[in-house]
Every structure is written in structure tokens, then in C-alpha cells.
Image (cartoon, rainbow, N blue to C red; front, side, top):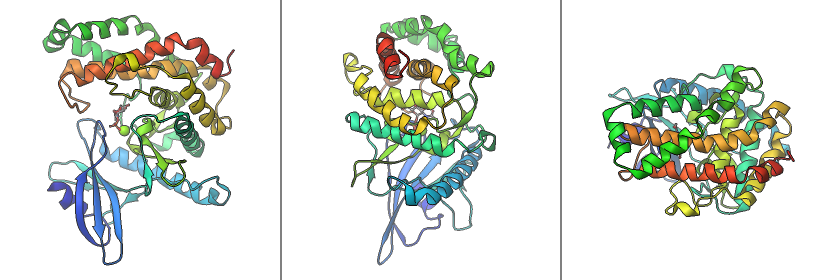
Length: 368
Ligand code: GN1
Ligand code: MG
């Protein structure tokens, strides 16, 4: 097996016992490798970075190196006064001292440490869990608030730039296959109408960036609850994983992504659309967790756009899923035909629920 051959190239002691598919990522191929010696065992994550998604995988690895060097030094320096043992995955180098391996197809493979005794939940469990998700993201943002984002490369150009996803949707619609997929499905027609009614709102964050009101920072890019590790011994968040999408961006991309994930108890694959809501108790909890750290670094202008990002990012993810459905499922991995359309409907239902609760959300944000 290719993953086993690759796993042996990293600088780990012992003999390979197993290497099995791991996690539920929608994009990369992830494996858990277990190596054993006479006395101990080491588990780590091996991943193939999909070239089709990340045109410049070396940029991801360079970003990961810059980020982890910055954060590990900070975590060490602050560890005596910290309220818990904060963690962050570490790059495991190859036996030759490289940060990644390139296979015969030109694909990049990398190895990172596994966070021990911790669990990531695909769906939010309760308000305490939502609080922890906010607390971990706030802690991460505070840690990187002094890491100038011009030290990072754009590993995924256009990531979270909503108007760009609208353009992709339009391009998919302009193909005969895309048109056919819409004409034969009431759900696809409904989803498209939903987007059309909100098209004008899709520029809100990019306009604020262009006008200079908002500024770029170092962002995580994908802080959904499934990427927040919860310590099994204490129930406390211990770190955020999945560092592929770390790059310059707006802090709002992360906040909107965290809230769309942690405030929807039905999850991204909700079996019943009627169960998809933006839960205000969960939102109150995640925002309280986030603010514990974020009051140190968020500007007044950034605070002003919080409702906008909470609404925009689920709308954007819905547009991304819908565009991929119409393009023939080329980006997100799917488990059944129509999976991406179904995912889009869940995100649109969530965006609708956010619209219905705008006043209450703004209240929690302290705006009224
Ligand atoms: C993808 O592969 P995964 O599950 O970490 C996607 C995110 C989406 C997420 C939705 C690089 O993340 O942006 O929010 O699916 N990652 C990329 O579950 O596009
Ligand atoms: Mg990810």
C-alpha cells in the first residue's frame, strides 16, 4: 500500500504496525500510522495533499512551518501561566530532514503528530462544547495576532472570497451538464433561487477589505467543530488541527466558519432539513468563549462586521457545495450522488435561520 511505503520514510522509531484511513476530511486523504518499538508506540497522521485542490502544496507546508514555529515558541513561553495544556500538531520530518515527501505522481505527503487523548466531534454536543470551540479559536487568533500575515503564502488563492465562488457557480451553470442538473431537479432550482435573492450581499466583506476598513490577518481558514480537539481527560479544548488552510485572510472567515458549524446541532449532513437551525444558546456560548481571548485584539471595525460574517460564511459554503454539484463533484468528496446538493441545502437552511434571528444574534454580539 502506498501510504505504508510513504509512512516509513518519516523519522519515527520502531516498525510500522498499521496505516489506516482516518477522519472524515472532505478534501485530503488522511491515514493514521502506528509504529511500535519494544517499549513504546508512536501514532501519527500521514496525509496526501490533493493537487487538484491545492495548486501549490509546498506553500501549505511552508505556511505550516512558519505557523507552528511561531505558535510552539509562544505556547512554551506561556505554558507556566496557562490555564491548561495547550497543544498544536508538529510536523514530523523525513529521515532526510525534509518537511514532506513527493511521490512518483508528484503528490505531496506529509506527517504530523497526533494530539493524544483528545477527540474531535463532527457535530456540536452541547453549549459547553460550543464554548470550548470559541475559546480554542480565540486562543489561536490571539496567538497569531502578532504573526504578520505577509510571512504566509496563499496556499489556496481565493479561499473564502465569496464573489469568486459566485463566479464558479455561474461558470458551472453555463455548461450543458450544469444546466441539465438544474433543469432536472427541483431542489437545485430552489437552491439557485436562494442564492439569487442574496447575490448582492456576497460582496460585503470583500468591499470592506478593499476600502481599507478591514485588514488581513493570519487565519486558520477551517475552524469547524470537527477540527477542535477536546481533551478526553478534562473535556476542555486543547487545540485546533487541520492547518492546511492557514493563510492571510479576514478574521471574519474564521468566525463565520466556526459559528456555522458550532451553532447547527444537526450538523453538515443533517438527515432532516427541518432540524437545521442556528441555535442561539450555542451561539451565546461560542461567542462567550471566543470573546474571552478576542477582546485583546479585535478592532471596532472588525466587530462591526461580525453579524455579516456569521450570515455570509454558511451562504458561501452552500454556494461552494452547489457549484461543485453542478460541476460534477470535482472538489468535495461525496458519499452518494446528490450529496453536494444536499449539503448546500443544509447550509442555505442555516443561513435562512440566521436571517430570522438577526436581531437576537446582534443582541448577543452586544450591538443592541
Ligand atoms: C473542507 O476537508 P475538510 O473537511 O477539512 C473545506 C472547508 C469546508 C469543509 C466543510 C480546503 O474541509 O473549507 O468548510 O470541507 N476545505 C477546503 O466540511 O476547501
Ligand atoms: Mg480542512
